[in-house]
Length: 264
View (cartoon, rainbow, N blue to C red):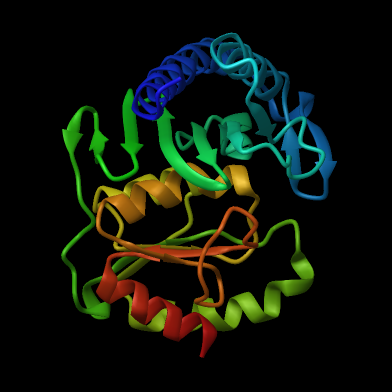
């Protein structure tokens, strides 16, 4: 299949899968309860809706591209070696969803040789769709978007995620958190890394950082931010890749400040 045709088709499939999964997620929201969730690891939950969403997305991808590999949160068992790889978080913000807190999404990325080429993040509750094709554009509900123009940390609106599954790292995280808290105009923790990255890409946030994430948490959002004119590194300021443990993303000026504050 021609490269450009494959990318265009991959974007269409990702959007369609995200919307279908999102519709199911919304339908099940009124009936979901925290008590029915399973705890995979301390602080890491999964519900029947996560699994149902994953099946919808996997089926869509496999039907369209049967030779591609899929790495999805609920069935991942290691990084596939295949050159064509889909990274899927079928319900990012599960804990929020369990408690009916309105911050959750479906995140889908398509990578070639481990470099994201397509990114889709869909918030079904607000019908908010963020899409990206490397080197061609990045869009919010079909309109071109870009990172914010904020240049001073005292005005910056920054978001983060807690290393809730790695509480032994809390002291190091809290040191950086305090530095950012004392310097930024505002700081938030939404509980959905996918939406944090999407919001950074469209300028709602000026930067996002989180020290411990998985590839499916970051791949789509990383591409959104980078293509929207932002800077993305790993949690130590090195080059980001899909095997990075964490991420710092933001507009160029605020990314540099957050990096200095959380690693200094």
